[in-house]
Image 1 (cartoon, rainbow over the protein chains, first blue to last red):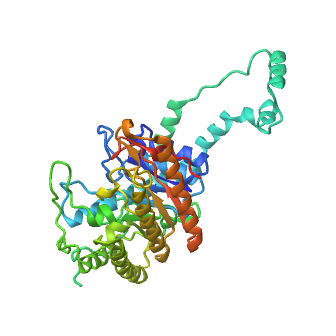
Image 2: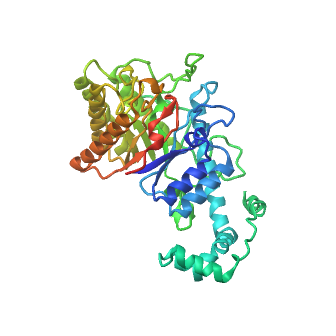
Image 3: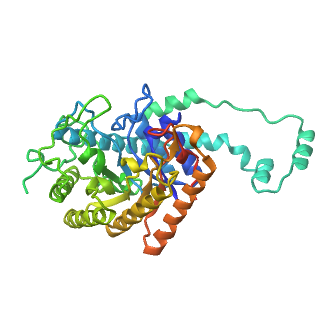
Length: 175
Length: 250
């Protein structure tokens, strides 16, 4: 079983869509996407068409990182508004959603090609690539061994900044 | 059959500078990105329910939508015509896939036997249209939430007969999904939840839901359906809280 994740369902649960996608990918459970959006001001499912470029970029960054959709797709579980009652509105709505995701795909690919975001994340976790970090990840450590290590060392190596603002600015270079 | 969208031709890519609202400004299906076409990356799908059955009704007002091709009857003729219109739309849009519920495409009858016959009849038309256009089925599913029999739940109903009916419905929906070459099958439990804990035995209901999903997997294997099964989580609505939120994928 895999998951079919829908933006409006994520936000009804108090999550962002990107959160649900990332958690699913981490569990190897991402299957398909119901591509829509909700209204954050409302407490119910509005099933609107997705037009937010930040949303579609975030979705495609995660999808590309996961290697892409295989059996699943971007399914527009979305409806035109009650006031958009002419048949042509069905075309406008779907064209908008498709263009928004195509644009998100291009932006996500550009961010990945640029490489600075991935490099920052790689650096952030670099303490796990060797030494004590590598020992822990490979299952060769224990509380006793870690205590011995830290009693000898005294204090952990210093933390470095999470750079959230820097990273949000970086994304904005590409939107 | 006359065109349902006579003034609309196939939607083409015109690029970001286009001012044509009936053209793509960014979706260029054959454009290659990271070694795959946009079409392959995005795998766009149109839903049958909102797009071809929706009329704009909400809790405070009746439907507003003009759908001149639909006589709003429950006849098989109307259902088949709707299929042709759906595929005309999806083909003009250029989306490669669609998704549907069993009850979106064919009318329910007085008996399950006749309901299944209705579904088979409309599925024949869907197969023709798939063949004509090359549009594929992304996934199929069963509607286990609209009918009053599902008021207390479907797989989590306190009424064992309702569980049985839901099982029969999913069996059939999975079989037609397989027949239509669907790449997957979805479970969204719209009524699997509770309104009040006063009348709810959570453990028993969750155990029943698990049994239902295991039976579904067993049947999938039995009929040789190789599509991907999906659980679609939703925390609430229409139920006050949904049990599917807590299910882990098997």
